[in-house]
Image 1 (cartoon, helix red, strand yellow):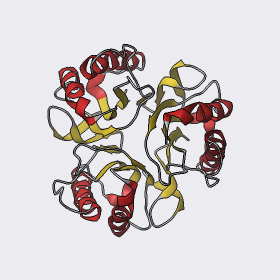
Image 2 (cartoon, rainbow over the protein chains, first blue to last red):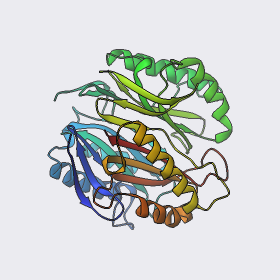
Image 3 (cartoon, helix red, strand yellow):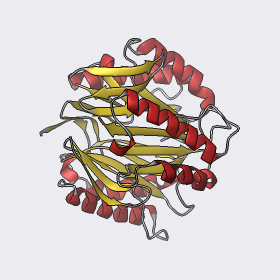
Image 4 (cartoon, rainbow over the protein chains, first blue to last red):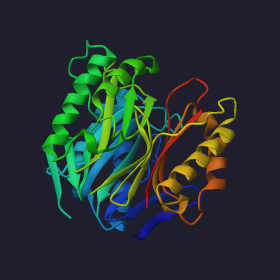
Length: 115
Length: 115
Length: 115
């Protein structure tokens, strides 16, 4: 079964497709001065683009892990999340608090989708 | 390939099935006054129910991520875990320490299973 | 669809194969006195062996979650990671900071691969 990789660098691919399943890398915002809501909006825009290049879209999300730098930013993340997801097709999701790549990275999201 | 979602709300589905694979959302206990063992027992009961509605059971677990609020509660979690799993069919598993949704949430478990 | 499990104990299997997808358990180093680079090299050697017994190899990685005990050890982990991965076939990856099983466990890696 062949594997298709998108936006690969020396370390990782931003999206990997195999057997009808799409694995998206942990995605963060570039605008680190933004609020958790703003960072999440940017992340979800990036995920939209990665899903599209992988031949699918947000209505076909299977699961998501949301890493937040502090549980206090979860409401802002959730506001952007709920405005974004297809309300008839939400994925399985877990949200946990971890430190992220830089101190001002407030949110990182990793999803699995079906093609 | 069609996707089936169970127990969906505005934010997430508690179980999502696609192509014979079942993704269960991060699951926590409602009885937050319980010990890590008690919380884990409640979580695993919820996972049993979600696996059942998804057409499978704990003997077909593929992988699990266990988030504990403090590594010191891992022994209590493991006691409930080992009493629960099908001893001939344990999943791949990782256990890491993260802060969870509320300060008294001691354990959260996210699993993938085969139908 | 049958499930194959490798190196199972009372708690978990180190590798689980179903429907052409391989789930590897969270893998840590035994030599806890090693640097993050050294620990990562040991981990990746173990993952090579688990992929092999599962009928695949590192060129077929789909996704990885890297847990580091402190973001300051990420450069050492990345050095070993970039020396190891098939440069034409990197997986989707997220790296987050969590406490791990013991205080001197610096890195834990969990991967999914295609057979």
